Length: 88
Image (tube, rainbow, N blue to C red; front, side, top):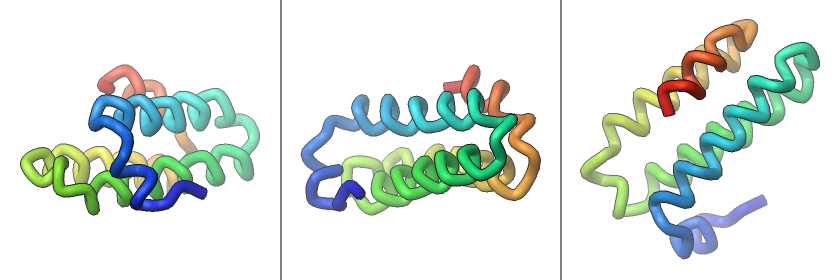
């Protein structure tokens, strides 16, 4: 598991890349609910780490919106992941 200290050493661009990668993995795993849930949990963790990084303060609203969409996919059936990934 990645720590906040390690996450802060990555660029903001890398943050988004890692989050997008997890969303893409979840999109591919929609048929396997357990895997999809695990990957979405990882995406939520990475978003939460980003929210703790001071470099995201100006863009916190966008991250919170993204987190809300990922959470909807987490509690739902994951059908919105295609659209969510396309928007990134």
